[in-house]
Length: 113
Length: 114
Image 1 (cartoon, each protein chain N blue to C red):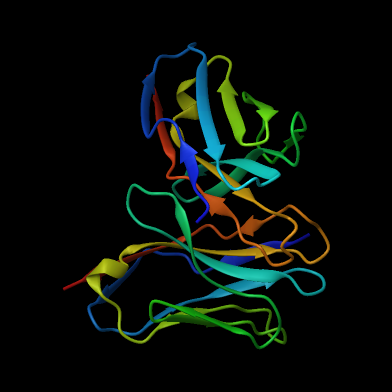
Image 2: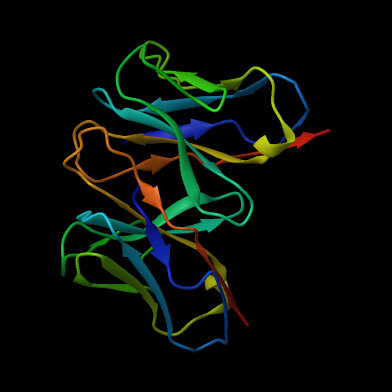
């Protein structure tokens, strides 16, 4: 069945460090792929998305590229800030169903000054 | 912008109490979801609804029920709360008419059952 696997945390980085959070997926066809962010005490917000192979989603300095050949959608940021401390979720929406989403277990990021 | 509003951010209830968690969205989305979030387990789907009065069980429906009497409102009910239902509850909605549409989430309701 459809599923998402993302790297386990927690991840702790110093400010201005490079961030990668790995995400791989299992799905038939061409799912839509998403990264959501959850700041402390809040719900999830969409960070970025990509809807077809080789698409790059970007927002707030974060990027992720839809790699069909490796079934991956890794999240990257070149220089993290303390304000990026949050939990990040990778998710997919299958191409062949209308109303289901599948989430990874989340990766907690802490950025220290 | 889509707004998904959960009526209570924090609740404390006692074992055996009936608990209602309310969720309202303002963008005419036909699909609404209730998730439970626990450390290390990510998001787990409790129930979802794709239309008024329609409901489907998710992965962990035991101990929960839902109500969708109006399109904009989706309620989660704990008939008899237990301590293992202490958790963060997230409501979400989306419009399936957008092929690549995303889920919109509320801010969450943190429930503690004593």
